[in-house]
Length: 297
Length: 279
Image 1 (cartoon, chains in turn red, orange):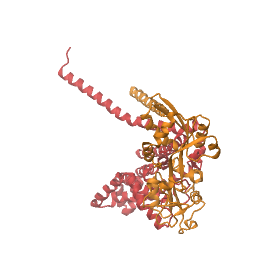
Image 2 (cartoon, helix red, strand yellow):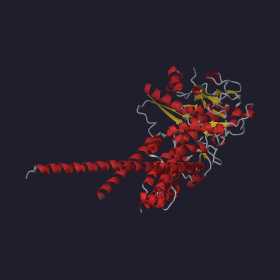
Image 3 (cartoon, each protein chain N blue to C red):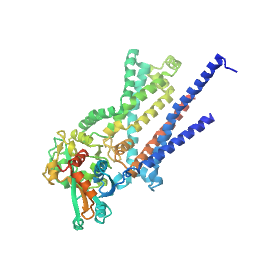
Image 4 (cartoon, each protein chain N blue to C red):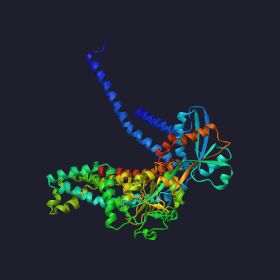
């Protein structure tokens, strides 16, 4: 029997449907495969020294000396540096970002918000290396001259650069969260005689809490993973920082700095450094997932 | 749905297999060359090695020859050339007396030289090698102790694994573990130069070709850092790159390779590698 024209066109339609479905699946798989490849590669390379060559993982995590040419691999100073830098930048970045978001969402007159909002978003588009160059050319000499330091490359320089870099994430995500708080909350609070600022801090921000937490975790991820900007202003010294003016080497810069010439075990240890970094990011992602699950309830 | 799941798992497994086999396979093919002429065995210094690899690559394109280069360190390479395991040994240090006594001939193929630089405003412009060592190992921490202003010294070094850093440490005589811990670590000559050029406290080391007006090159024992002074062997922060061999072991092909290195073509490659050529 021969197909009617309608059946024919339907067949074609179904075929196209199926084909595009497959194509979209393929596109979706690309990111999954990339993830699997990266994880597989980093872990394969990074675990080799511990599994095959008998290096101690505990010594690696808690060792204070990183001297690859003398076969000493300890990343503890870098873990400390990464944590200090991240926490420090949160202490500066979160209040500034949050207040900016409050201002944009609640207080700012429309024309001002119209200028401010895009400029904050533009900040997110600046390549990280430019933040580094800015830090090296402006922040480092500024610290050196005004604090009377022998060198401006320091933990505080890293913290300042990271704090600026995380602003767009904090501002845009928490602004969205604040805007999502129902108007009736504010109206209720204002009707009870609470001032506008009181309403913001007692009602709106608590209501937007999960969104704001998500913003903080996201920016933490950015801070701990940032490399290019940090490498230029950190000084990369291998010490456990005891003051804000010590120069530091976070985990990311250790990898970027030494990968160029590393070979053999040294290179594998840099991948192992990547595993440590990866674990931090993974933990952050878990926290983020927990927070958003809570927010969904 | 289940099918798709299975399919994606296959895909991921396949991708990982391909990747793993690619990285384990990549390591071994640098030495396998296709032509089957004479095989010249060279072993020795890890500093001379990369340069020798570059020279060999060019020479292999011109001649029917395989050149095998093993980077095992100067002393091991010299020993190998003495007892005939390798035809030619590579060394980045001068021969010791007993090594010369065992009948080795040495040919200098190039010079390696490094310049210590400070901020142009620094009054200190002349150091001994021992003073350089004390600065980089943190025994001297203020320029005042060396006749300069009362400024803390900020040491800038290359990253571990860098050839320049290895060379510098070998010539000056300290190990990576001894390097002062709070030194700034910068990747690349340009980075070190910029850091030193913008910090009155800083001192670093760079290759000859990077020196310009933004930094002040330091004299070593009163000798200025110029390629001429390296070639006449008065500048302290330099070392010869040597090929050593026993005359009776050296084949025609080996002699041909050495002649190629000393030719203007060979020396051109030396210069391109950032090492000081003989002419």
